[in-house]
Amino acid sequence: MRNSERKHQHNRSITSKLRRLEKEFRETITAGKKDEAVKLLPGVFSAYDKAVKVGVVKRPTANRKKSRLSLSLK
Image (cartoon, rainbow, N blue to C red; front, top):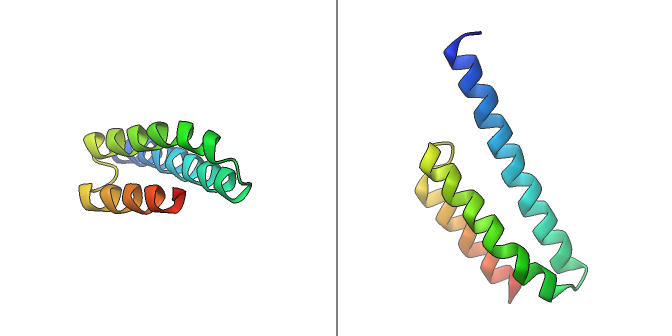
C-alpha cells in the first residue's frame, strides 16, 4: 500500500470520528439532555485538538467548530 493511500485512510477515519462525535453531541442537545451534552463537550474538543495536532484539520477550522458547538449548548 502506498503511503498516500495509508494516510488518506487514516485521515478519513479521524474525520468520520469527528463527524460522529459532533452528531452525537448535537443529538443530545436536541433531545434536551443538557447535562449529558456538557459531559460530552470536552471529549469533542479533545478530538478536534488531536486532529489538529496530527494535521487532519486546520487550526482555524477546529476553533470555529469548537466555538459553534459551545454556543449551541447555551
